Image 1 (tube, rainbow, N blue to C red):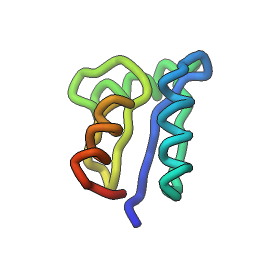
Image 2 (tube, helix red, strand yellow):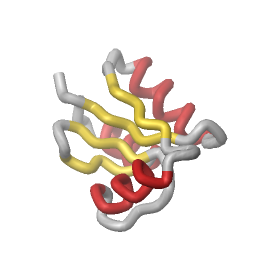
Image 3 (cartoon, helix red, strand yellow):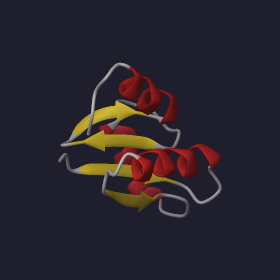
Image 4 (cartoon, rainbow, N blue to C red):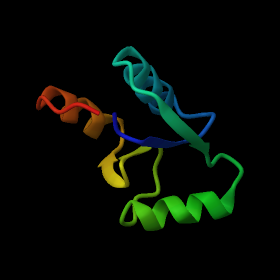
Length: 80
């Protein structure tokens, strides 16, 4: 199973939806909350190629994207 990391913020409904989808798929993940952490947010932007929104999901260091990207990833038949 992939090493999955999801960057989130407490106020983000898409973050909650992404975590639910991952949980429903049986995927264990590590969450990094960037709500009040400017350093983590800066790292997120660097790792994601400039994306500033949350959630941002990574699997084995590979950027999957945000919630819509995760849904598309699964619809295309990929697994984590």
